[in-house]
Image 1 (cartoon, rainbow, N blue to C red):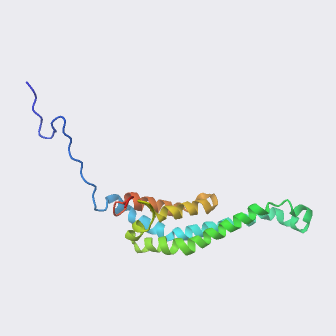
Image 2 (cartoon, one colour; image 1 turned 90 degrees about the vertical axis):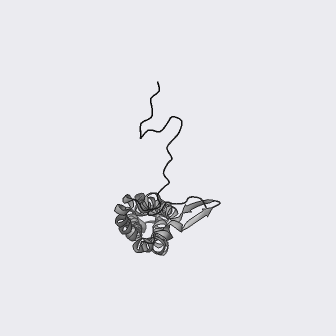
Image 3 (cartoon, rainbow, N blue to C red; image 1 turned 60 degrees about the horizontal axis):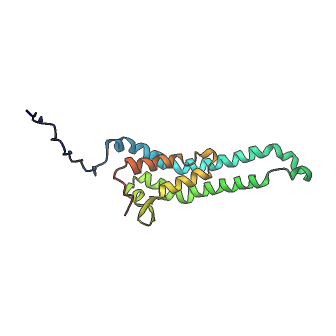
Amino acid sequence: MAEEPKENEQPEGTEAPKPAPSKEPSSIWETLEPIVTIAGTWAWVIAALNGLISIIMIFVTLSPWLPLLTNPLYAQFIPWATIVWYIIVAIVEVLFAIAILRPRFSNKCKEQDWDYLLNDVLVLGNFRFPWMFVWAIILTIFSWSYWGGAAVWFCAFVIIFMGPKPYQWTE
């Protein structure tokens, strides 16, 4: 004698249909939205401060060599290429934070214009890559101790993976 399935059980061989992803914002997003707004609003300041700290650290690192600058024999041993490269990188980071990150990311986070951030993408064939990730990569590479892009990384991951709408990776 075969047992009959109980009310909540599915017969063997059939699977319960999977629910479609919700188009409504998750409760996680409702919790994180104020944090993302604040972190995104200040992301350009964090990146610019990181660049300024880089410049200060370069001169602190250079300070033991300064007395040797009067003697050309010793001045040749100062690692000029590295110092010049670090200064250029720090200036690029500050300019990037002011010219690109502030208007295209921080101001949009402040206005809570999530649609703009979700649709501001680099199209690679059929793949939509968010510019937020590109900016975070650039800031991470050009920053002192790699923390200049931390606020952008945090906001980008939350907006893309837990944001107000599901992100469409392909067109």
